[in-house]
Image (cartoon, rainbow, N blue to C red; front, side, top):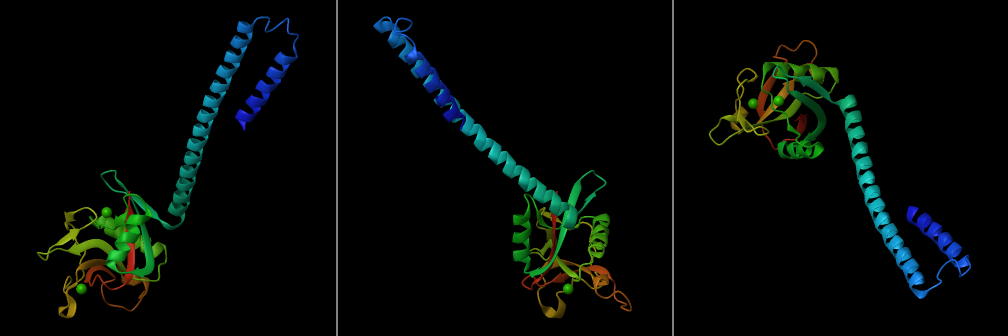
Length: 223
Ligand SMILES: [Ca+2]
Ligand SMILES: [Ca+2]
């Protein structure tokens, strides 16, 4: 648009020049040549400026799109996600999902959600408690959530999101147990308070080894 306006101005200037008596301009052939050369030079400069303006416009559009994405993230963060600061000054955010997925599907879903997101790794008692409060507060009507914990080939447990073996654990009584002789290869965070508020004598919150191909809820963690 700017380019068109500048061209229009140039055309007006040119018409002004051509409207002048010949005695004031172009009294000699070389004088006309100089004018034409200057006008061509000006046109080239205008074209270059137009190209630069288009480039700036494209960059502005990209910045606007990034800002929109940030706003979406903030909105989502405020409404459905909970964050905490650990003692070492690290900030972690969590988002719990009740739509059921297999462990692999849930992990892929978390990883596609935000850059660096993955299934949750519960590394401390404080983090474990935070998830209890979070799932309570959000009033989620479901109690089994996949974590990034997986049984490795030697039977040990590892947080696949971080590559670290389990340090702190919150296994329930007799867990992990490969219940009924079935290999249970994924670690689930269980909050029975979500649907058995009273009268249930079992431990309310614990970890359970479960079969990873079953569809369950899950919790994503990101920083
Ligand atoms: Ca963690
Ligand atoms: Ca089990």
